[in-house]
Each structure stands twice: as C-alpha cells, then as structure tokens.
Length: 589
Image (cartoon, rainbow, N blue to C red; front, side, top):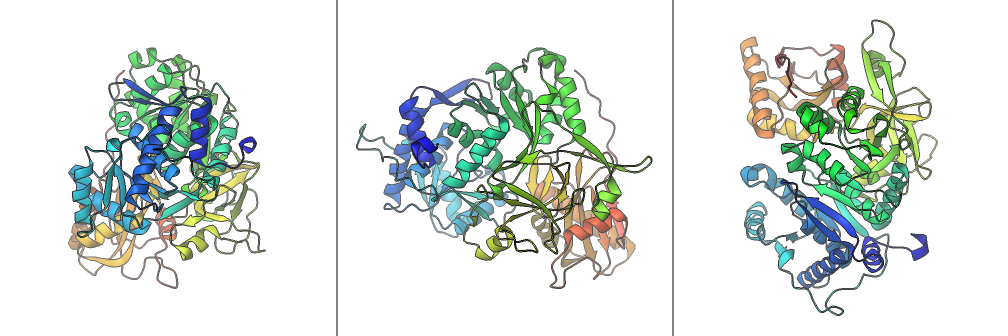
C-alpha cells in the first residue's frame, strides 16, 4: 500500500477498478445456489452513485449513515458509497417484521447514539423502514434513501471522485451485538481497518491465488472486515452467502467452498458442529475440499472435539485437519489479534478445571481431576503487544497464570463513539508500572510457551449457539416480567457442560422472602420469561437469599464472582431449577 501513498477504502476501491475493472471482487450465492458476480469497476460506479445520493440528502455533511440491507450487492454499494461520501457507515441488522417489538428498539437506540437521521436501504424496504422507524423514534422521521433508485450521473461529472485521502477519518461505527438498551459503537478509522486487514492477510498467508468463501453476517466484524474488506484490500475474490441460507441448509456453505475452489473459509465453532450433524454420506461424497488451505475458527470458544469431529467426517473430501486455524480477536481491536501458522495445525491442552477456573492457574490435569481442554489461538503479529494482566492491580501475570488479555496495536479502535469515559476505561489502560495504553479485552487468557489460550470471559458477553447476548438484556427481561425477585440483584452468565462442549445459560437472582412453593413458581417464571422474550432457554435458574449476591463496594453486580461461586457450590441456594437431560440424539447419514 505504501507504494501508492496513504489510502482509504474509497481510494483503494477506485485503484482496483482502474487496474482490474472486470475482475470479480465478490460473488453472492443465493439460497438456490445460483450466483451473481460483481466486479471492481461495477462496484466503484455504484458506490459513487450512492455517495452522490448521501451528499445530496445531507447537504454535503458526512454524517453517519445506517445500513439496512439484506446481504448482497446493495449492501456493498451502500458500504462503499459511505466511504466515497466520507460518511461513517453504521452496519445493522434490518428489523424482523415478525418481531418488531424486539428489533426496532435496538435500531432506534443505534440511530440515537450515532446521531444520524440517514438510513440507506432498498426500494422494497424503504416505505416500511420509514414507517417503522417513525414509530420507534417517537414521530421523528429519518431520511430513508433507497439506493437502488439513485440515478447514476454522467460518466465523469456525475459521480464524486474519491475524496481526499484521510486515513484517520472515521470509516465505521461497529455496534456491539446483543444489547438493545445500551448499544456502543466502536469507532474504526480507515487506518485501523487497513492495518488489521494487513494483519489478517499476513496471518492467513494470503497470496495472489487465494480466494475466500463465507456465510458470516456482514453486519459484524468477522463477516464485514474478514469477509468483505480484507479480500478487497488484498485483491482476492470472495464468494458470499446469507447466514439465513447457511442456517437453513448448512451444507450449502461447504458446497460453495467446493464449487468455487475457495482456499480460505471459516466460521464460529457451532457451524462446524452443525455441518457434522446434518451431513449425509451423499453430501460428503459430492464435496471437494482438498483446495482449502486455511479454515479459521473464532468468535466463540473453540472446542477441540468439534475440530476433530469435523476433520474426521469430511476427511473423504480431501479436507486437511491441519488447515484449521484457531484465532482470537474482538471488535474493539478491529477484528484479528492472534493466530497461528497456515497449515500449521492446532494445539490443545488438558488442564485441571478447578485450578483454572477457581485459582487462575493453568496446570496439567492429574488422574481423576476434572479436565478443561483449551485450544491455542496462536500468537500476535509483529505490530501487536499482548499482555496477560491482573485486572485488579494492573500487574502483568507470568506464564501459566490466568489474567485479563490486554492488547496494544495500531489496529485497536479509536474508542466508543461519543462515550469518552467508557473509552478511557476500555482503551486507555496502563499497567502498574505505567506502560500503555492498552485495550482491556474483558477476556481471560493464559500464555503457554508463548501461545495464547483463551480461558473465559471476564466481561459480560455471553455466546450461546453462535449468538452474542448481554446479561443486562436477560436480567431486564426477568425484572420486567417476574414478581418475587429483587431488582438489580441478579446475574446471568454462561457455563460449560461437563464435557466442555456446550455453553449453558445460568440465571441467579435474589428472591423476596417466601415459602418453598413460591420460590419454585418464581424460578419457573424466570425460565419462561427468558425463553419467550429472548428465545434463550436457561439451563439453570437459582434463587438466593436477599443481600447475598456478590457486588462491588459501589453496588455493581459481580457476575464473574457469582459464576465462580456457582461453579464452586458456594451460593446459598433457596431453590434451583435445572433443565432435564436431553435424550440421546440419533443421527442418520
């Protein structure tokens, strides 16, 4: 990139359009597995048209613009149109018409937080979006732009030229997933994005013959930065499909990889399990995965048994187990933080579970001890400094000791949009001896022989079946729907099952004094409220006496400590509801 001077994504797209106008940049595979291809020149022209529409609607002010599209070429045109207009793009899930009461408040909160009235979408959705958002925003009608109706201008004068190069200019507001009440936009500049794209390309071993194939949502960091921006930055084609198509027909992902000869693909852990469960012998026989050089896995805990099952099931396709590439990252660091070596295989360690979770020590399990298997997520890139730190004292932890993962890198985001205090706390950490600034990840990790092993989450994010949930959402549902529990005296968190294969939701609440029969009814009400409102069935509900939930001196709930006490059997339980064991699953091929 240096040979061309500093660039943003508008300049980068334009350069690709000039140098390789007809080359395929993206391929979108529909649910029937037909495909539409879009080249660099076509995308460049559409982006300029969208930019002109944005600037006309905002009187030339580059304010943030919300992107509400289904995955496809229109989403790309809206995204790069924002880059051309110099307007920060705000990717978001389109509202679900069947569950507007749940999806509209989050969109309204994002619009309010981002400080924009500009919404980009398509003509089939525009009228509905305007009506729905007007209701959600209490009568304030946003400016909804249907980009497919935007008229292209003359070949030269009608399209904006690439704006002056300002790599530090905001490019994205990447809103964290899972919270409907308190969304936080991670502010990412072109420079941060391009640095992380370079880190991904380096870590993945991308070369001129590389190509990608992904189904990941383009609204979040892994699908957007890993699946859209990195391929463009490195000039490799990528085949994409909707996450809805994948969930309906998981093997369509692998057929896409096989059909288009992708060398790079990847997904969260649950996707590999899903493919193993759904694959028939006929499915396997019809696949050729021998060309896959790198299969990344991240965004949720990586399970060694999942990797082994997938590699065994799809070995007849030519899939190589050593192509698995466990990696670690987070939106606040743009995306990628650590990874291994392409075709270098993966490493897991069997550690004593109680020592790891209760005392923060990573040691091999002895005979008879409960085991926690962790998969190594590689090492940071040359520009990244990674520390394992005591979160209370700021003291770096030694090899083999669990602590919070802190990251220092040019990829680390500029902070949370319009949240200076939270940004200072999260992005401005310094160690006890004054080194920094570092990003506090909120994740717990340990380094063994220099490699990062992620041990859990200190932060509140819960990942269940590949979906992110914030405990505050779960707790607020309980407090709004269930009498008999004490407000602001509950904690939701995830624990692993006995085999370490599945994360399960646990909800703990202080209960108002009542008899045992009332406690059981209250626990059942908590279970039903969370299941109905959030489609997240709890595995365990525990009620405890008043004033026994762990809190800080300032009254903040300590979810991590509640989880630790739950695992150690130290909670004073009034009643416990626990889901019955599922019947053994039988599969056919």
